Length: 110
Image 1: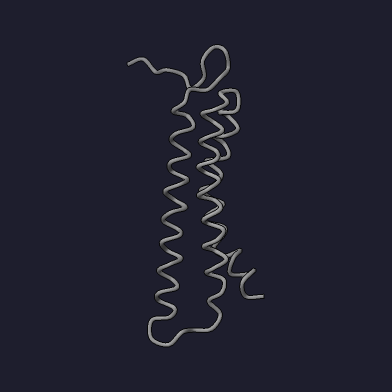
Image 2: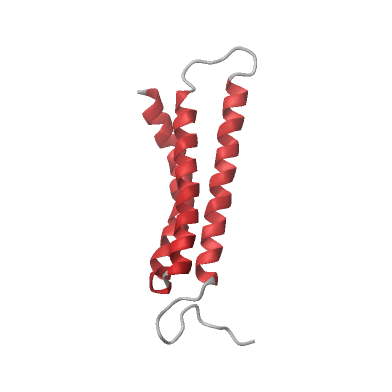
């Protein structure tokens, strides 16, 4: 089985190297938005609880990260010389989304 390298001899990365991380980052951000909505639903199930404003902050942040993943995909496909930076950025969106939840809780509680 012959393995094809991610970059051609000229240095530009292939398009699939940006599609995979961008789509995964977008799906991850979407799942976190659904989790934020679920947290709002559970927090106001019977009697609305105080201190749930941080969830709105988390939802906004996850929406921005979802938009950033789409923008990263567009830049990576439009400019082949930027595919490496776009792929790294897209891969970094995934852990940033996870770290945004406790950060949003700190921001929203103050």
